[in-house]
Amino acid sequence: MLVTVKFLGALGTLMGAAALPVDLPAGGTYRALLDELSPGVQAKLPESAWDSAKQCFSRRMMVSLNGVATLSDPSTVLSDGDEILIVLPLAGG
Image (cartoon, rainbow, N blue to C red; front, side, top):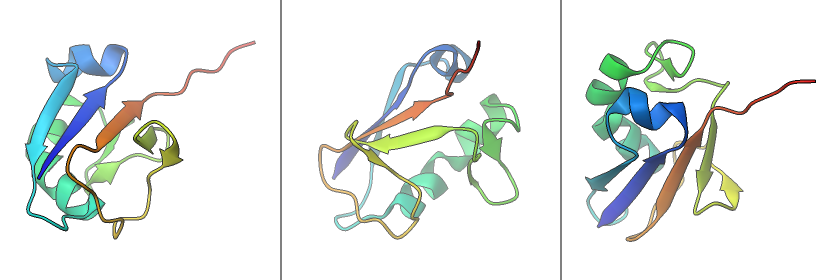
């Protein structure tokens, strides 16, 4: 199954691509996706965005599934065609 990971804003620049297609086996989980992404993401994103100890996006990052649900549970099963959006939330005042 094919899942697309979209890196929004400056993250796309850091990654060298705004979107990455990732091929996972049927029934693949968010953890399987993170494991697949880990080598490339760890090499390109700073520690503030990627937690290398846990091999996942840091708590500062907003990760959503198909633009509607926050994705944090590594056991979440993904489906063919899913879009995972990675955003660094902004704050100001």
